[in-house]
Image (cartoon, rainbow, N blue to C red; front, top):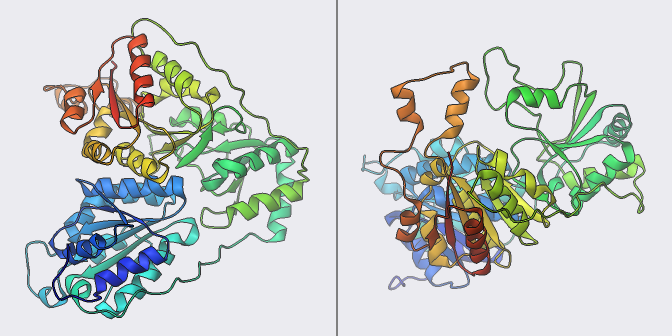
Length: 522
């Protein structure tokens, strides 16, 4: 696609800037205002352009991409309504600490004086969720603005950056791409803070709660070695963007979702040292229940926030407590369950999953209530990574799996989602089929928003009638996930026995493309 008579314009200068700065993937849902940017992308086949049929799919995919790649992808969005559609999964990305670069087209500057149908407050919407927002004033500024937007997205371990391009800044002449900008320096705790934390972790009933990159790879093992050396309890919060699981990973205690058991997990804890994570908090407020789970006398020490240098902090802490080459963390042993037989249950799904997860797989988990029964056996499965919801806005799993699969094409991806959550971003199935992504989707069809049924009980309502039931179920008509998947180009099955589920999961893992398994659960 070429624009006749056009030389280097603002859109082309931005595409070249992104490529020169290491950005080669854009999740797109463009409109008329972005056509010059589309034309610029078309002249650069080295840029991987992935069409998502809903803007929430673009931002969810960019989130999953960052979690696995640890670098930024772009999104291409259309005006204020398009950004609005993208908002929920940007919320999840922000809570996950993911870096995302949004490129949003707007009306040409001379057209903004008129109240055209798609005119909206892009800046207002963006500033409600983005760490950094800028509107390029002219084509000559686009490349430099793009370089600064990218630096902002990569800053503080990952931020949401939004660059708004009025249409004329994309089509007017520009000089060329901008040079790379130096990264921002991460803050580090003081030596005194490190030493105080080291002493605190040696005391009785102390806990070290970690987050961000401390939850996977070598940093996870380093945290385990600190726990082994000091005797402290290694912990993680409930909702986390990515964690290593399975055999060989350092043992860790995760806070559960319900308030009362969460409080019980921390009874007697004398101190919690936070590294790469925020203070744990109840998901919601409930009548007569606390908002925070730790005991009143527990010392809460914010050693290293999620935006600081987490890797340096953990290494400094390990040095301060005397971790040596011989200090080994307590790890999970490989213990694969036998494949079950008979009528399929959630417990049996978990056993099959634990037995068949391939080494180095990626599991995207938004199974919510079903996950309480499905996930526990995976603790001793083959080593793998788990990506979970972080911001509570449902509809993350399917696009997150898309982004993870594109970031790591050599790894198997398994997506576990509830049927209610999956309906928010159903269109992501089509993207998986179009891109031929190696993703096996498991939809838990409990025919409703089971989490809401549970939450009504949590606020003290034991029985409910017709109106509440109508807002909780997704029956009448019943969603047919086999037909929905096939309609998006994804082969699908609905097994009724544990043996059939194991066969379907293995078939999905053996293939190189997407597949879907519907698990009907009551």
